[in-house]
Image (cartoon, rainbow, N blue to C red; front, side):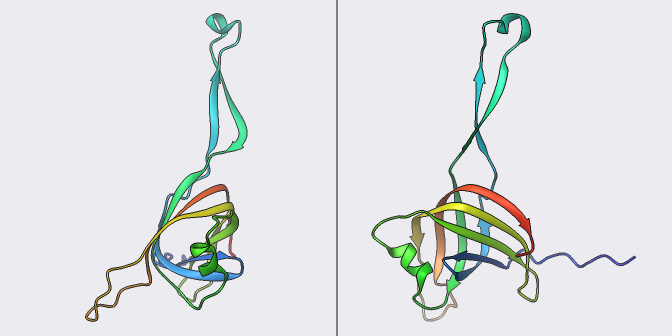
Length: 143
């Protein structure tokens, strides 16, 4: 029984508003909820109770070494004066560019974008690092 070859972990695509940008590294994707410890009146006999609340926690996600084509909605979202929350998909692509795993992000807000150091003798990317605050992460198979 032959197994599928491992996925290349260097090909990611972030999509916002129907426009995509390709990145070679993404870190910080996690599903996390706020938690609190509640001590009830009988806690010295029964112990403390850990409650999980349905509110989601915002986390910082870093997208590194990326390129985007054109001057569309993705670029407008990054450089806009008002940081507005938008849904975003982050996909891990196979060697043909087909999404194999997609992280759906309900709310994403850009907080910082840095460009590379430009040099005529190097082949640098258009975005060195894009940091976004995200909440409401879920994982789906495929795209």
